[in-house]
Image 1 (cartoon, rainbow, N blue to C red):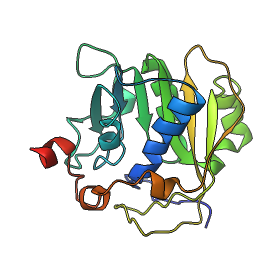
Image 2 (cartoon, one colour; image 1 turned 45 degrees about the horizontal axis):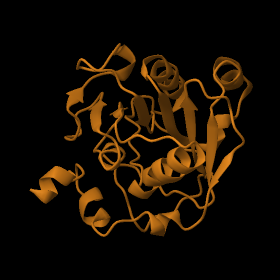
Image 3 (cartoon, rainbow, N blue to C red; image 1 turned 90 degrees about the vertical axis):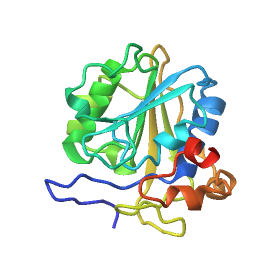
Length: 218
């Protein structure tokens, strides 16, 4: 029950609950790392239906969303691993994503570290920290600035966000900030699932794709 197993041709679409991304920004970046992002550009390269990207619009000056498959949310349908830059003049300050499974997750990270100007945040299973191979390929060369553990479980469901769902899988945020040395692990406290929820989350984030704030406010 502690792992997700997908077919080789699966698009690995497990939307991230909006409260988990708000916890990343408010607690991990703002509180633990003292990083401000209101003037920064974020890129979500595996945006799916917009569950992470739409939350990023609440914090960043600009958010670019893309995916290898057209889920109806992102501006660009592209293979992130084949991209050398954003489809725009400015580079991304941050790359924030819930990457594909298996070996693609490592490739996503290494590519993101090359492209992001300031930092990278990846939402992954706790088990992602394991294996000798990943240590040699990733952590020995690129140790994260911060490992942020959720004290409460983050529920992921294939193809949708279920506000009342449960899970047996533990997830974490891994954050790399250029120029900052690794720090002691950070625990995202219990209660965030409730405290970082917003009144219109269920209405907006259960739609396919996610309802954009700009459309709701229009």
